[in-house]
Structures are given as structure tokens and as C-alpha cells.
Image (cartoon, rainbow, N blue to C red; front, side, top):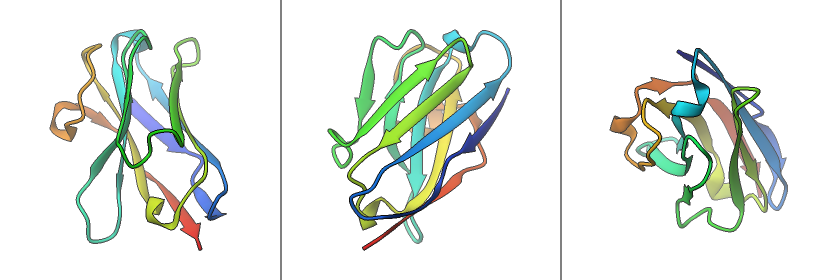
Length: 123
């Protein structure tokens, strides 16, 4: 299983970006997917997650109401729509997959990781 993240870039505060992450491999719908981020000098933190059947999602309090996670099982792709971006959202964003349909916020529970894409929000 390989994940390829894209969509990062430089944006002004208040702007929007959409991250994408394509997963190669079988049975995309059986994986729970998550987005994490890591800012310089900080630990990796959970941002958003979505169940295999997309029935349930979960968000970190810091992004609730601004970010939306979604998935297209036909395209084996997960998205993170980020609106009203703030300078504190600046980080490398990673997509992750786990061989379970259940959600979890713990990075250790995800078996597969993408390479990361940098999001920089200027003030």
C-alpha cells in the first residue's frame, strides 16, 4: 500500500487549500483514513479522520468547522478541504491509512503513511 499526498502550498490567512491523497492497493473502502500534521518543533498531531464507509468522521478541536475530510472510494482518494486557514495551521500534512474501518486519532494505529505535503499560511 502506498499513499501519495498532494495539494500543499503557500496561502494567505483566511484562504483555502484542498489536499488530496491517493492510495494504491486493493480494497480502499476497507481502510480508515486520517490526516495528521507536524509543525516545526512539535509532535505530529491528529487533524481529521474518516471511516472506511465514510459514515463517521472526526476532527481535532482546532480545525472543527474549518476543515472537512472526505473520500472517493471509486478514485481511492481522500481529501482534506481546509478553509479559513490560520498561520498556526502551517505544518507538513500527512495522510495515513489503517487496515480497519474504525476511526482512531492515534498515529501509532495507522500502518501506512504518505510522504507529507507542506502547507504554509502567511499572516
